[in-house]
Image (spheres, rainbow, N blue to C red):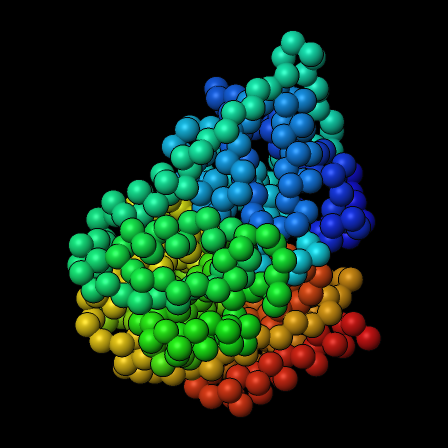
Length: 456
C-alpha cells in the first residue's frame, strides 16, 4: 500500500501533517510494525516516545491505540529524546520501539522511526520486510487480548546515569572545571534532558528556547546559519562552549568560546579525539562527513572508514568492524559503550571532556587543524533514476576516487563531492568540501548541470 507524498526510508516514514501523514497512516504503520516485531520476539513490550512537535500528542495517541490493538504492551516514555527510546528498548529487552519525531524537519512535518529489538533502527532489509508485512495486512487482538499501557518515568534519569558512567569520561575532572555552557534546544525535547545532564557535570547553564512546546521559531536543523542567538548568548555569558540540539536530541552543534558556530561536522571530530585518545581503533563516519574527522583521528592513529548516510548504516558498519566510535557529520555521535545510536547528550559530555583534557579554548583546539569549507545544496529530485547523473559525473571527474555505496562520492586528497537522493525529503543533496568555499562551490556548480539535465 502506498500513500501519496509519504517519505519511506531507513529513517522510517515521514510526511507533512494532515497531508501525507495522518493518524490513519501512523496507526497502520505502528500497528503493523508492532505485530511484525512481536512475531519475532518473546517480549510483548514496545517502547514509545515522542519529541516536542505540536502534532506529537495526536500521533502519540494514535500509536498507543494501534499497539494495543495488536496485543502489544506499551511502555510509554512520553516526551524524550530519540536516543532515550533506543536505550530503553535495550534496557528492557523489548520487542522494539517507536520514536514519533521528524528530527530536523520543519514544524509542519512529523514521522515514525522504527527501532528493532537491538536498539538500532531497522536496516534496509528489515525495513522492507516490515513494510511488506504491513501491506499484506495483520490480525488485530480481540477484547481480551488487548495490550496494556504503563508509564516509565525513569527513562531520562537512566539515560543521564549511563552517560555519567562511561569509561571515557572523567566526570570529576569535568566538574572541577565548572564550565559555563550556553544551551539552545530550539523548543525541542532537548529541554527535558540537556540542562539536567549539564548540571550533573557541574556546569553553569545559560539557556534559550528551553520550553519544549514544538513551536520552532527558526529552522530546527542545528546548522551554523541558524545559531545566531546561541552565538550571541555565548558572547554575553562568557561561556566556554555553546550547545545546540535538534528537536529529537540525536544531533549536537557547537559554538566556540568566541561566539562562532564552527559547523556540525566538528562534533564528531572532536568527540572522536576524546575516545581515540583512550581507546585506539576505528572510527566510522558517513560519506558526507568532513575530512576534519580524518585529520583529528590521525593524531591518535585512528582509522576512518566510510559508510552510507543514515544512522543505521553507520551503526551496522561499526558493529561489523568493532569500531570504538562513529557517527555522522550532522552532529551525530555514536559510542558503542553507550549504545549504537546518535546521542546529543553523549556528544556534549565528550566535548566537555575534551575541554577538560586540553585545558585551552575550543577556538584554539580547532585552529590547530586544517580548515575546510563545506557547502550543501538541495536540488529538485528527478522522477527517474540518477544513474545517468552518476555516469556523467564519473566521466567529468575521471581523476577522482569514486565511492558508490550511497549515490556517488568523488574524492581527491583535499576535497570531495557527494551526490545522493535524500531519504528524508524529496530532493537530491549535493555536498562538497574543499580548502576554500569558492572551490567547494565550484564542485557544486559542476555537479548541478547533470542533475538539471535529467529534470529538463
